[in-house]
Amino acid sequence: MLFHDTAIVFGRYARQTLRSRFQVLFGLLMPLLHLFFFGPLLQGLPLGSSADSWQVLVPGLLLQLSLFGASFAGFAIIIEKSTGVVERMRVTPVSRLALLLGRVLRDALLFTFQAVLLVLAALLMGLRAPLAGILIGFAFTGVLALALASLSYALAMRVATPQEFGPVINAVTMPAMLLSGLMLPITLGPAWLDVVSHFTPFRYLVDAVRDAYTGSYATAHMLYGVLVAVGFALLAVTVGTRVFQRAGA
Amino acid sequence: MPVISTSGLARTFTTKAGPVHAVRSVDLSVMPGEIVGLLGPNGAGKTTTLRMLTTLLAPTGGTATVAGHDLLTDPAAVRAVCGYVAQSGGADPYLTVREELVTQGRLYRLGRAEAAARAGELAAALGLEDLLDRKAASLSGGQRRRLDIAMGLTHRPAVLFLDEPTTGLDPGSRADLWDLVRSLRDGAGTTVVLTTHYLDEADALADRLILIDGGTVVAEGTPAQLRTRYAGSPDASLQDAFLAATGRPANPADAAPVAV
Image (cartoon, rainbow over all chains, first blue to last red; front, side, top):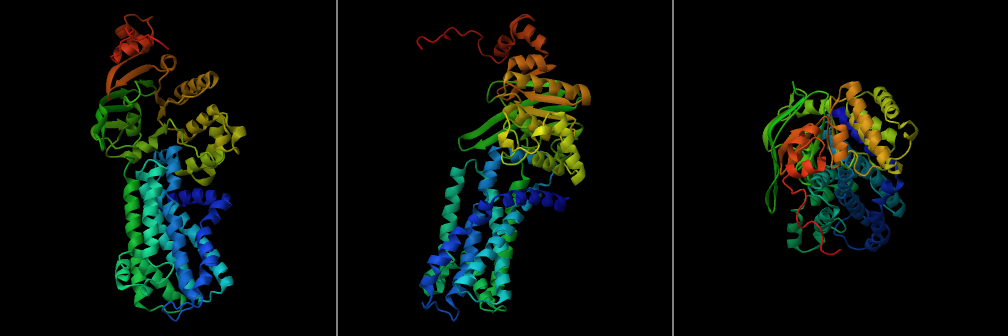
């Protein structure tokens, strides 16, 4: 039943997304701007590794795509609460968990698709990386999108208005982006910043994807990256499930 | 045997300003095939009561059974037998009538073909056939409300809860909706519980009225019984009976504004 219901909920939101080219492409704007107007600045700068500057930047932009895209996924549910769509679905026998999973799977797929377009653009800009590394990057993008979308929907179910939701998400995503070194490796900075950075989960993900982009797969970074990504996703889906299973508050 | 019975049903919300007792203690008994009107001032607890009976909100006190299923221990079974149409409706304005009807069928676990067939039946029964490919946002108020009700009827529920179903509708659409509710009861034996602020609607449509105020039932009976009991005569106005039963003076001495 869970699988059946999840497929139905996924189908509904996937069709909705496909009908809106704006929704399919909008999340790409910020990472593309960074790619075109920030990426060239890094070429030739000493970034503290043997990797090419594109191999350092693109992994960060992939995670930025998930971080900023999926964190705002909850806005849709705030609108659906006000139009009554959420309650209309909740009075049916549909699995509560499916109402969450169907949505987050759509998000994971949507942001992975955007990641593919971003990497294609990066290839044109000069990125060179092994195919396996690029695929690993997509996997991290998808898992992070799934986790953040779950948390975003959970928060959105608990707040009443977009005015309460937006500022919270902004307050979390901006520091998370800066502290995890998505744009530049944190190792370039002072030791205290590096220490603080290790308290943000995304730091481990970006280190792992940067390794993958240089073709190093069996590294400590990769191990920690996988553990943190999977652990964070499990935690986020658990939180989301709790909120969705409890009747409306 | 009543199809809905509640005993001491209560819901307290915890807010920053302290607990809010939206529903203090509601005892209801509704027989199969009845059309029951829930009346009461704004904030009386009508919507909260409906949201509890439809499993959307967990009660903080009391017990209830709906169509033989315990609300607290078996909410899934209650969902399978009751339909709910919220005041706000439930259609996504940017999706088509067909998409919404079919999705609702699928959420009620109908197969793909069954859901499509059921969508067609519902559209025919509620006069939505020509609107199937229109977006919900482009429907008139009355059409929109019929779509909401069609979604609530997808699984042929034994009990249908309607929260202010005619608010905002023009007189013709209201009359159509009354006919629809009556035909549901007469045809399928559906029990209908609806809230309303329109006393003429309560009078014309409901077999029995339940007045809720301050989170409890303050009066119940047929419209004629309520008139006799609270306003002194079966020919009195329901408005006066309503005001008397909810403890508001029918003609307060200082009702007329001194200046306008």
